[in-house]
Length: 152
Image (cartoon, rainbow, N blue to C red):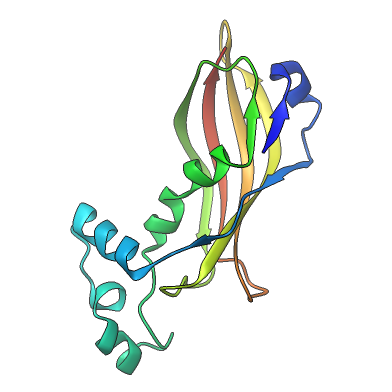
């Protein structure tokens, strides 16, 4: 994990890749639990035999929003800004799901800092371009421009 010494140092890193997460296996169990949590039980995600038989991907795939929901965890293992007392999900500017994440495959996330914008006293909106890579694939699973509010 990269430790960044405060908001001033973070501001010097705009335009740079600031970290890459570890690889994470997206298991069928995780996909099933996400389906239960969201109520999205489409067969392409949870019916292994049918997905192996009928899906053009050759097996069950993770929900796109499951991949997206993993970004905070992947970011937490990638970098930390010293002095931040809280971080709040502020949303997204852009999001594209470019390739399926098959059950059992591994993903990781690359974070490139796009901007650091003051939002009042001790508050900064931080934007990252996040590329979710699939192990063994040249095409990313997801590219997102994320927004977070950091409080110092």
